[in-house]
Length: 127
Image 1 (cartoon, rainbow, N blue to C red):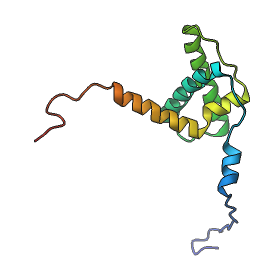
Image 2: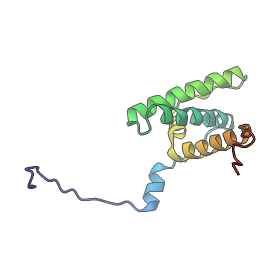
Image 3: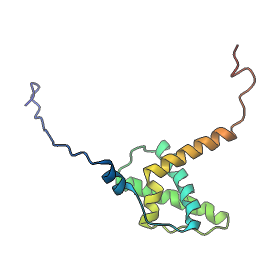
Image 4: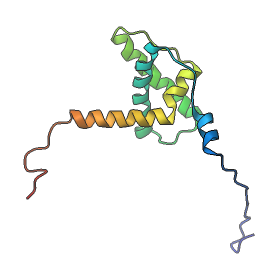
């Protein structure tokens, strides 16, 4: 009991080795090559949702966000005449996988930086 009258709880901590962490978070199931572009597009939507709506969603919300992102990617694929991707568990994991979304975010920011117009004259050179 603390001096403020609160009951303290002490819990044991188990730290997993890196190989256990990598094994549990890696999705090794292969996907069809035509699905890769849809997954990439869904990743972009998913990362945008993470930034706009909820950066740390619960598992249920994360699954819903992944399904919505894939749905938007499929709509874009259909408009381009490409086949849609089925929302299987493997596909949804790939959409919401943190490492993929981080690399997707990097790619989006890189392409945004490349496509942005140059700053007006005198903005960067204030001397």
